[in-house]
Image (cartoon, rainbow, N blue to C red):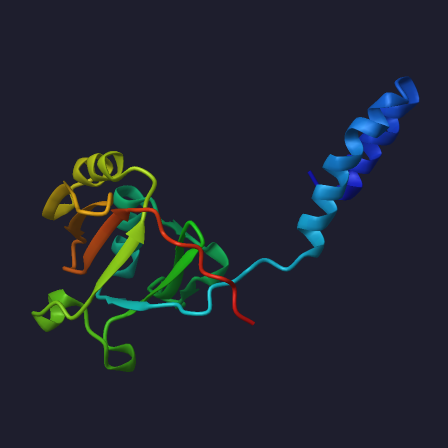
Length: 175
């Protein structure tokens, strides 16, 4: 709820019950802080090339739980998507046209040149979701020394994705 709407509600509630104002102050201050403080944005955004961006976006959402950032979509007059951003947690990845900046998907280039690691809360549940959506599994879920779990999967164009659950150390924010 926007701060102005919350303030109006608190004002109405306080007319009938003065204690409602005291209870609502913290919620109002939290809403104001959220609206005023700038959102932390990623400073590194990997870009992955795809021959069929529309299909890639659909698959990444369905199989891996990514969410497209609608305002980032660049679509031509012909309806072809040329670029978009997807997010997962606080990470962002660019999905772009094959051949842009010389990059090609593994499907077009015939070779894997990188993989993307994504931290997930539950590797086994995520694996089941990906499997149900038709992801090709490269490495089944497994436990590693140090207490982390992983599995690896390919998307339809051959990009390798590594999903991991581990206790990551806190990294301080840099200016």
